[in-house]
Every structure is written in structure tokens, then in C-alpha cells.
Amino acid sequence: MLIKIRPDQIDIPTASEITPRDLYLSRRSFMARVAAGAALAGGMGALPQAFAQQGRKLPAQLNNAFAVMDKQTAYKDATSYNNYYEFGTDKADPAKNAGTLKTSPWTIDIEGEVKKPMTLDLDALTKLAPLEERIYRMRCVEGWSMVIPWIGYSLSALIKKAEPTGNAKYVEFVTLADKKQMPGLSTPILNWPYREGLRMDEANHPLTLLTLGMYGEVLPNQNGAPVRIIVPWKYGFKSAKSIVKIRFVKDEPKTAWNLYAPQEYGFYSNVNPNVDHPRWSQATERRIGEDGFFAPKRKTLMFNGYNDVASLYTGMDLRKFF
Ligand SMILES: Nc1nc2c(c(=O)[nH]1)N[C@H]1C(S)=C(S)[C@@H](COP(=O)(O)O)O[C@H]1N2
Ligand SMILES: [Mo]
Image (cartoon, rainbow, N blue to C red; front, side, top):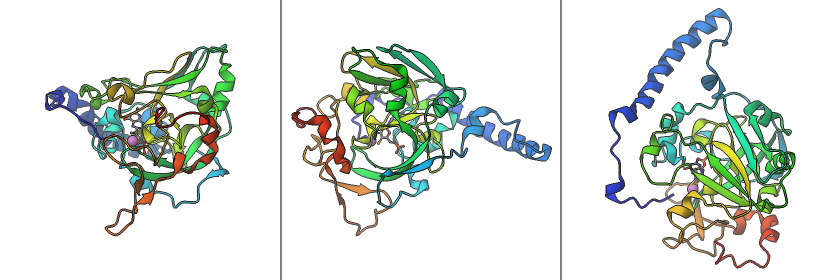
């Protein structure tokens, strides 16, 4: 996201705010020593959960019906060029800083207009439905895109379990906001916690992926571990990271970027080359990894190429509902 920070809003981090990262680094060298010790002892049992999670394999069956043919983005690019403002606004910040995110134990609260409100831990969430690998395009509103092999299952499986009432018209995603783990929270750019939302039919669309992994592994922290949503026909910011609450509601939920700049970021945020952002065109995009000097920009596709979703918006003026 291109931000407009007033100079007076920029916070110089204080020593105490830098500490978690320093702590992480010293803990890492400590862990390296623990791991070496554990390897000698013949097991990794001594590793705390948070660190054991990173890089863990997550087996899943490729779903060919949900796999684009485009060349996949390199793992290195997908995990080092990120937007995750809770860990800083620079593209390199999340990879550098998100080591402090503690992803285990983790729970998600399912609440609001449902017959079966529940709290699911990561294990229950992972076992709720068969894991699929899906290769999706992701288009950021800033004008770049990637192609990522995600792992998860349709959010609809979870929705079905929760049994929404007739009053549930929207789904709201609330993400983690913990100053102790997230250095970016001390910069008041967004109104934390980062929040997103979908209309019920969008949330139930089979493409909407409850996401637990990518590239055959659990999600790296910088990509929104341990659980996020991926909505491939919408701009990347709809795909909220590190979700702690899924709330079923009657009214259109407030969303972080819409609160920040309502004239620039609407609730729907469908990828649409015909509706420009007020400050730049949305007609083309730069595919990360193809950014050589002579690489031509790609034409952005309506709904990011996911034409099946068009029926969700029949009769709606997509200039008005941007
Ligand atoms: N909690 C949270 N979720 C977030 C963001 C964020 O800053 N915080 N950034 C969004 C934006 S703008 C994009 S483009 C995608 C980037 O996902 P990726 O880094 O896995 O490619 O995450 C989205 N989800
Ligand atoms: Mo984005």
C-alpha cells in the first residue's frame, strides 16, 4: 500500500520498541545452540512450538481446477517482498521483523450471527477439511503481482460448520494486534487491529481460501502465519494475515484501509483494470520476478482473471462499489 504519512505521524522507535527484534536475534542464536544440542540427543523435542512451526512441511493435494498456468513466483521473492504493516512499511521489513510473531499456541474465535460459535486451535483448523494446494494470482493495489502456491481449503467449509443464522450477511476478519510482538503497531498508520471483510456470498465462493501454508510448508510469519485468508479476485489487502477472529455480522464491516482512506479503498476492492485508483492507473501490473529493464508490464485482467466471480456482482455498478 502506498501510504501518506504526515511527518508528525512518524514515530521514531524507542529503545524498548527495538528490543523484541534484538531479543529474537539473540534467541535465535540461543535456539541454534539448543537445536545443536537436541540433534546430538537424537531429537528436536526441545524446540519450543513457535520455532518448530517455521518451515514445517504441510502436505496437500494439488487442486488442478484452482491452479493458474502462470509461472510461479520464486519462494525468495514471495517471502521477502511483503506487505505486513504490523511489522513495518518497507517491503523488506516483514521478513526481517516477523520472527517475533508467536504462532503457537494460536486460536481463532468464530462468533457473531452463528448457531455454533466456537474457538478452534490450529490443529482443529488444519483438520477441518482436506488441505488443497491452489496456485493463485495475487494482485496488489500498488500495481504488482505474484503467483503463489497456497495451501488451505475453501472458507465455505468452516462457514458450514459454524452454521450462520439468517442475519449473517457479511463476514469480518480481525487480525492479531499485539504491540509486544509487532513493532509496526507503534506507528499509527492504520487503525489497528487490521480488519477486513467479505459479503457472505463472496466468503462462500469456492475460490476464497482459508490459508494455512504456501510452497508446501506452513505459512512463513511474514506471509501471515499461522492462518490468513486469500481472495484472489480482489486486491491483496483484502487477504488479511494472522487472523484471530472470524465474525458473522448483519452490516457491512469496517475495514482497515477503507477507514484510512475511504475515497481510495472501497469495501469490494475487486481487481478491475477499468476503475483507476484516484492516484494511479490500475490498467497494468508488474509481475514480481519479471522486472528486468525491458520486461513489459502485464495487462491487468478483470477480477484478476477469475471470471467465475462476475455473477456475484450482476447489476452492481463497480465504479460505485469499488
Ligand atoms: N494483517 C495484515 N494483513 C495484510 C496486510 C497487512 O499489512 N496486515 N497487507 C495486505 C496487503 S496490502 C497485501 S498486498 C497482502 C500481501 O501478502 P503477501 O505478503 O503474503 O504477498 O497482504 C495483505 N494482508
Ligand atoms: Mo497490497
